[in-house]
Image 1 (cartoon, protein in one colour):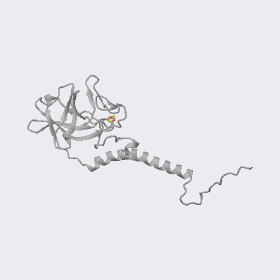
Image 2: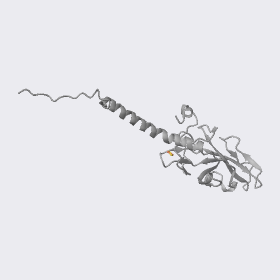
Image 3: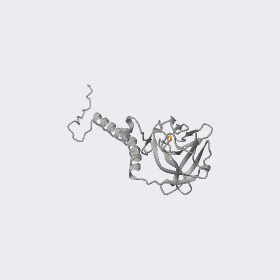
Image 4: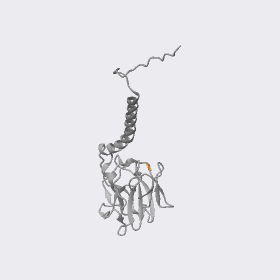
Length: 215
Ligand code: FES
């Protein structure tokens, strides 16, 4: 007796029927959307955090010049009105000038550590590494470590020296050990130590990506 094949049902006229191709296309679109969101949401979050919380800065007295010995990098907590309270800075007193380097990693913001042996900074989170001036030497950070404005005044508040050239820092030659060191507004720099308005973690200051950020 001849074998009679089972009837094949054609669903193509059924408005509720989803073909395999349509189903796979839908899966691809949903997966792509989730992946795009996973990439953009944290990035947009950083950008929004920067713009939604305008920060006010003022000069903060962090000690006498003698607290920052010549030839050394001294780590200090920058205390003052919120939101400065949780921040640390490295005061670098080398080559006759002071620089104030922020400990916030330029990648995603982890606190970097200073190593006096190599005179370098390293980030524990994703291997970011910076040289003596905070310029990137390895890892994912898109720009150097940010800086604080810095100046030296007398105990009475009269300016002794200011940071006219960011790359050179504040000259200490004319200052007394009892003069005061003050930190001011933070800013970002590029690899040539040219100043830029403060950027958020992960945000480049130069190149095509700087114009496209965060998109
Ligand atoms: Fe420092 Fe990622 S947060 S390398």
